[in-house]
Structures are given as C-alpha cells and as structure tokens.
Length: 201
Image 1 (tube, rainbow, N blue to C red):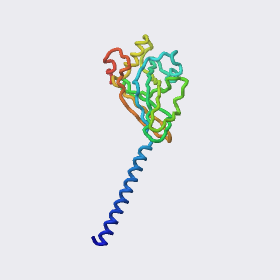
Image 2: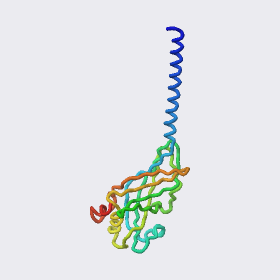
Image 3: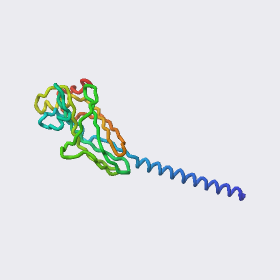
Image 4: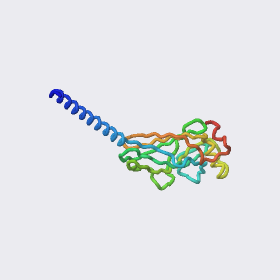
C-alpha cells in the first residue's frame, strides 16, 4: 500500500473514531438529560370510596364546599402514589383534582388530607421513588340529606358513571404542572342498582 493511501486510511479511521466519540457523548448526554428531566405522575392505589357527608361529621369540609339549598355534599377517599420518574429530587407543592359525574360535568373537587392534622404540602420526593397520599375529596350535588349509612354510600356511588373519569394536576417546583388521568372502575363504590352509574355517563 502506498504511503499516501496509508495516510488516507489513517485519517479516515481517526475521523470515524472522532465521529463515534461525538455521537456516543451526545447519546449519553441525551439519556442523562432525559432521566434528569422532572417527571411526576399520580397513580391510584385503591380506587374511590364515597359517601354523602353529614355536616356534623366534617364541619371544615362542609363549610368549604358550602352547598346551596337542595344540595348535599358528597365525599370521596382516594389513595395515590406520587411517582418521581426523574433521577433528580422534586417537591410536590399542590394538587388539583377533577372528577366527572353523571351530570356530564367535570367537578373541581375540594382537596384535603384524610388526616386533618397532617399537611399535604410541601412534600419532598426522592429520585426514582414514590410517595403516598391519602386524599379526601368533596363536592356539592343536587339532592336531599336522608337515609342511613348504606343509602348515603349509594348516593355517592350513584352520582358517578360506571367508569368514573379522574383528572389530577400535580404542581411541582418552578411552576411545573404534571397531568394524570384515568378511569376509576368503581369497584369500591356502593350503588343502589347495577345500572345506576350508567344513567348519564
């Protein structure tokens, strides 16, 4: 092989190695940047449970919802796992919850901790881990306060479609918002009949 051909081959190999090094560096940088990007998600753990709330049972929630005449307050419990899919820590600063009812509307739910003595926020979440949240959700609904424990549970179940859409917005650091949506299968809800949840779905 002539000297010029050997030099040409050597330069080609050198350029190829340099190109490979640049591509590899970019790829690993891209992977790292993607893993470090803030990514929070909410996942349901147990599904919805609910009841019609009596004023004397939870006066704080009743006052916040402030039902009008011929309205009741429906209260639901929802256990969440907040997943941090990033390799960097994050902090949960707020949460908003909407649920779609049989009237066809998305209701912005009153959100509180199941434990009235506990603060929901802020909540630090370590990298690639989950944090549990036990939420109490409430909204107003057309109806009259009546019935026993079973009837009150059925009132909360009957107000939701068979598959109840749930939307969660997580507020994190630097004003970032992460949205999670799913359909609750209603397996923990009580209903008056098997078809009650289909009425206006």
